[in-house]
Image (cartoon, rainbow, N blue to C red; front, side, top):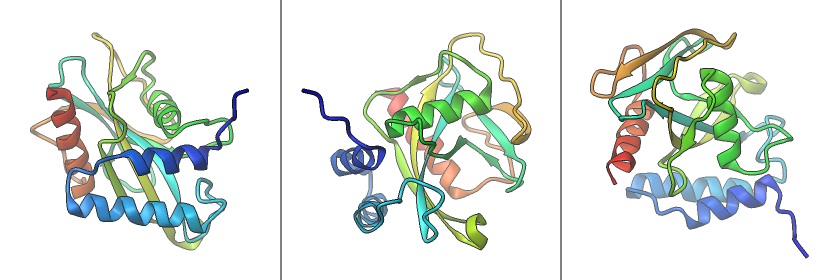
Length: 184
């Protein structure tokens, strides 16, 4: 008999098993686990204090470039990602779905080993709440051409060592972590 896990159970298992690359990242991971334990609806945007989201930095097949979106609301260059949806069964699938929808690239592959980073940032949901973002890294097939979605003002490939502005430290940390995972 197979027991179906909820998305919240998956998130708890993923974050419990993940070895964070630094003490700072481990503190964020522990905060996320506390949030999951305290809120039955921690995976959904209805969770007013904050909710888990899933994202992915999309790298070119050779790891030399990263695909970024100029977010329509935030007005910064960011990775693909966003809210979990009822059809998502795992954080990985949520991250892959978001990356595929926002990049227009089919055939993306998440790098093995689970998340590469976590980030907590303030957002405008419910007049002000938190995104507890579990971040993955994905690789696009050779020759992939992105297709801009209606959520983006722009969508472009950038050299991994020449990220555009405006962006933030969370994106720089995610790209560095993704490059590190690609190098393994």
